[in-house]
Image (cartoon, rainbow, N blue to C red; front, top):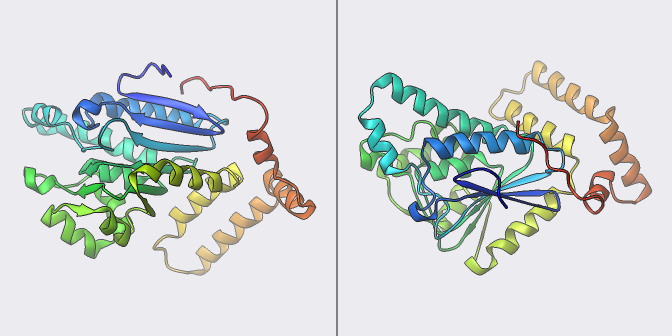
Length: 276
């Protein structure tokens, strides 16, 4: 599907957008162009009501090898201010992925290095092939995993981050599963089936409820359980109960029939939204 992007390809079907990183010759390493395109594509998909979930995947032999070395060499020759602007663009792209209102799934295979792990950690759910290799490689280059650190530390915890950020050792899909970086692991030939099974669960949820749930998780994660937090959670569920989607979902459950948002997926063909 021609999307007008140089380094991305987007495929739509059954309420799911497959967002493919398309630089297989460099193992989908990203540069400033891919970062800008990812930011734009994610915002466009987020604004498209026909999209219920987004799968982030990589073409070729690897999911994502992190930053493109040629791009990094160019930035090494630049000043601090230019490097800051460049790094901020990457940080904003990661935040866009992390805060997307739609459920996001990382389809991981081959290798995920450095910034590639940041993409995984920013997705809600990650499914990886058993032969995938992972590495937080930045210190080997005299750098630090700065922009990905807020998400990766949340995913694997501070204690494990100390080990893998500092050692830059390669670890396996089994290790990634044990650390909580990925939720499911599957033989390579069964990876797509595992992703499809997960999507089958995701498209059953109410779109507005899922967006509200993502906001809820960010609000309560690590927060002390105070009267203010209790009041906030009560306000959130009260609003959802009184919403059109909440009422429709409860009626469908009571009547033992499919929810309207699942019926919509089996009905009319999608109408793609214009770019945001």
